[in-house]
Image (cartoon, rainbow, N blue to C red; front, top):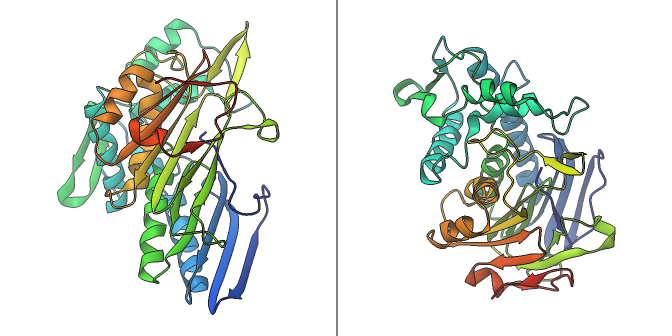
Length: 350
């Protein structure tokens, strides 16, 4: 799970539903949060049509929630997984878009990102009451079902087929980013200039300014401290997407070793390269900014600090910071300028 803390306004209350509308400076401010996509979604918008914008955005999020869920029989992902090794499954064009974007980055990263790791995710069960360390043989068997090159797409009729029976995809590392992009489109349609889209911390898009007319301040989780004990640092963003990944939200410890949910598709084990967390910031004028940010946090985590930073530096309009287990912070040139209040536990690598 990816987690970021918004410092701009009141913190969320888990499992709650809140909606509020107030008028300030002849402009309406609307905020609503509720449980969707296995997290707490928080939308905040200012504008004369803020209420309509948030209402339509929530409806769109509900549609995406069904579409991308591996457990909802009405959803595309469930249907694709059920047809693995047998049939092409006709799906929503949006599902095709997410899968194509995933495959694109799988190729660019030599497989560091791969949505076909679902069999391994289920095997490990990290984040559930069935979490365990599988045997080498079990992992080897599931690895035979992993491979983005085994996804076949027919764009002409929006259909998808997984080539081997037992294969399965998981869009958990991309769907929230796609959803945030969709919400932003709706906000733009209603001329919303100042807004915060927070999909459980997995994907954040900050548009314009907050209620105090300042850039949005986003607190980044310290990977080894509780939120009440301190932050890694603070990043100010405006008209930008931000996402982070870490080994601290879904994990278990056995024999003094931490096993987290970010799996390396090449080994079948949790990525083990010294990375604790990474954060991506992408300018809003980059196409599919939130979706790319979502993908890239996982990608960089699996690649590791050195390869990951080199990968990010090759991409225009994208910035990154990586924390490592030796308490160092590696950051791209653009990220260094925006990070403030770095926690004393970390040393920034120049």
